[in-house]
Image (tube, rainbow, N blue to C red):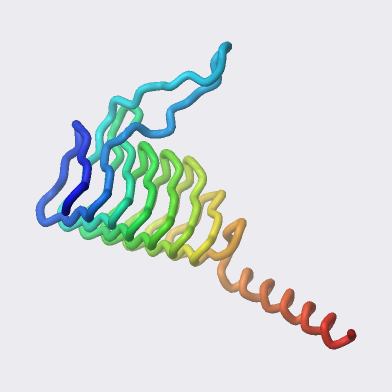
Amino acid sequence: FPNAVLYPHTRIGADCRIHSGAVIGADGFGVHNGPNGPIKVPHIGGVEIADRVEIGANSTIDRGFISSTCVGSDTTIDNMVHIGHNCSIGERVLIAAQTGLSGSVHIGSDTRIGGQVGVVEHVHIGKGAQIGAQSGVMRNVADGQRVLGTPAQEAMKTMRMYAALQQSVDMDASSD
C-alpha cells in the first residue's frame, strides 16, 4: 500500500499485505555507551517475511544486527506494532495494535498477543501462548501458557489478584 518502506536486504514472501506507513528493515536500537557518549552500532542483517503475512499500518520491523529478523507464514501484525532487531516470530501468530517487542524476542507458532503488550529483550514466548492486553512480559512464557498483567504472570492468578484488590477497595468504600 502507499508509503510503505522496504529497506535493502528485506525479503517478502508471496501474497503478503503491507499497509501504508509500515517500515521494514530500518536499523534496530544498536546504541552502546562509549567513553565519549553513545556509539551507534550498525545493523547489517535483514528481514525475512514468509508467505501470507499481513503487516498493519505504521508498524515497524527492524533488521537484524547480524542475522535476520524473521516473521513466519500466515502471521498477522496489527497497526502500530514494533518488532525489534533479531526477533523470530513463528507461523500463524496474531499481534494486536501498539505491541512492542524488544530485540531478540522469540515467539512460537499459534501465539496470540493482545494490544499494548510490551516484551523485554531475549524473552522466549512458547507455542500457543496467549498474552493479555497491556501486559508487561519480562520473562519466558511456556508453551500454551496464558499470562496477564505487569509483570505478566499466569492469567487466572492475575485475575484473582485483581478481584481481591477490587473487593478490598469496595470494603474500604463501604466503611466510609
